[in-house]
Picture (cartoon, rainbow, N blue to C red):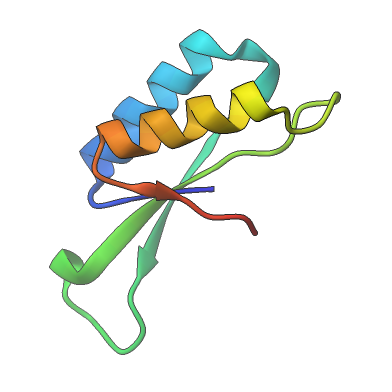
Length: 78
């Protein structure tokens, strides 16, 4: 899962991943409000990425990290 600062970043990251890594299948974008916060400004956006059939490889994890960093986010394992 990639954690990104806003919806635009999440959508752009998902588009880039889909174009570069078709084996990831359909990516889901989800708003994740921070605990106790009602303000939309206090939300993070998640790009939910399921492992491909062959599982996670070091190059694929590096690619996820690079895309997350490009959009001021990070990768979290769920």
